[in-house]
Amino acid sequence: ALIYNMKGETEKAKAAMANARKANPDDISLLIAEADIYLKAKDMAKYKELIGEAVKKKPNDADLFYNLGVVTAESDAAEAEGYYKKALEINPKYVNANINLGLLMLKDEQKIVDQMNKLGTTAADNKKYDALKSQRDALYVKSLPYFEKAHKDEPDNQYVISTLASVYQALDRQAEYKAIKAKAKS
Image (cartoon, rainbow, N blue to C red):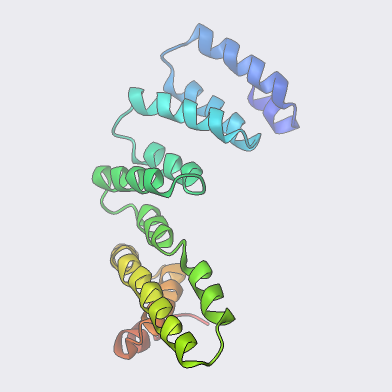
């Protein structure tokens, strides 16, 4: 199955993996390998189903919950949030789960920015702008604890440093911005 998958022969890989799983129904590694075949085939529904099955067999595997969060984030943010939080319950130092939770909190930011950019300069538009800016700032504030936790657990992670710098700057928190920016590598 793995060789078929590497060759790009997805249907043969799926069939071979199904046969292997029938012969070894309790082998969690086969289950995860089968899920990976569906992930590579971009069949997220089947991937999610198989990872869900794996979670039942291995309920303390933070990676499985994290992966469920990743594949669910686009379609159902609340469900993805639950999966990421479960991954963090299992492993509180799961940096990528914290990063993705922070990003999930910011998912509506671009819509708000687009609305802000469409406004004119009338008094009414300025009032709408201020309201939208408050909404955007609330998203930043909601995301901040996740990025700060990720930074605490991985202080040299340049992606986290860059993201935190952006959030601090957007919130006009200059002291924190300057401190974190000093850690950035050019």
